[in-house]
Length: 387
Image (cartoon, rainbow, N blue to C red; front, top):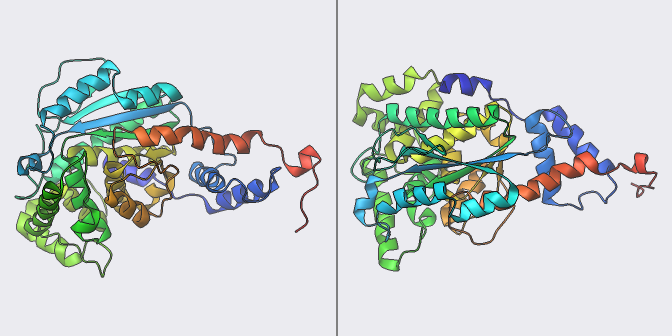
């Protein structure tokens, strides 16, 4: 499934991008007067391959939930039980994400890809549990490559099913106590940034815990032989070779079985070493949306880390993404910069769940609606400013 999805992803159409920009310039407004909204509409046109692009509605939020073995290192003040408790809150409609989703009429789907407990059946819950949480990434690989691929394909399936059910915009959501630690490790690996630059306060920690969290991320990169090389801007070939040697031939075989090109196996190895099940699932969710040419609105630092994985598997996937907001987490800015994405909202949010992406959805719809409904200078009989 992963190989088939990667083969279906296409880059933004350069001809359509040019046509969309030219069309923007013919609308009854000063050129560039809608700022970033114009670029969003052009971006969605290029990704969809048509001008104007389809309206990105209805929207569907998918919240991927999982637990993390690194929680045992004391990187979060919240007990791990909060993950399962928040899943119940999402299903009951009591979370901030539920309120924001109701505001825009988005559906909410909760996906268990690795919660460390058995969850009761619920029609709004999709059970795709890979394991009861990842292993402690600071002691060795968080998961096997096979588990990483399983989680990726869980996200692919959710994206495919939501699009088949009528969704025309996908929104990333997450839940997992300690997942900002795994996010910092992934971002450090894929961007080449030092852990101290990309490790933030998560759900709210003191200075002592923050220092320990940075140390844990460093340990994870060291033990998994993924130390970032800032001069090269990310994961290095020697690091990949060392990781493969440390894991044995089964690692390369596991990556090869999914039929991806050799450079993409690097991303799978890094994901398995320091990622979380929800990171992998969100990366798959992004790839699934890109393959269907349906825009994906990225939320905060967890989505940013997952998008780095998706982009490493297929750079064209980024053409189908919109950065909903900029998180207060420093790693999120690093991830967005590496991906070349400009966030639409900057409200110092650090909640996750998909909240920032949900807030951005009306702005994206407005950007596209302009191209559908605003008259051109010619059609409205309005005199254009001389060039």
